[in-house]
Length: 89
Image (tube, rainbow, N blue to C red; front, side):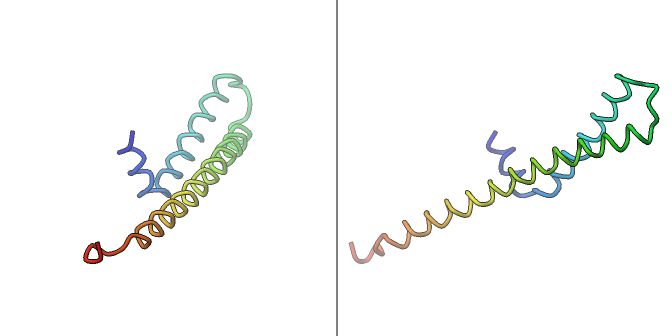
């Protein structure tokens, strides 16, 4: 699980793009299965709206992740700067 998290942290835009593409494809497939008589253009519009909503949620999660990672790093840097150098011990 940690390797997946580290990969996603390094490749944020790729991950978000992959989520968007998979959401678009899934939404198109579900719409085609539920109502095959609906026009393709309407299915594409709805699929794009669903994919964009999911992408906004993923972007919000990425922003929160970035915020808390920066906050944790700042706290770690503060702790490291508060410890005296080894030659003073």
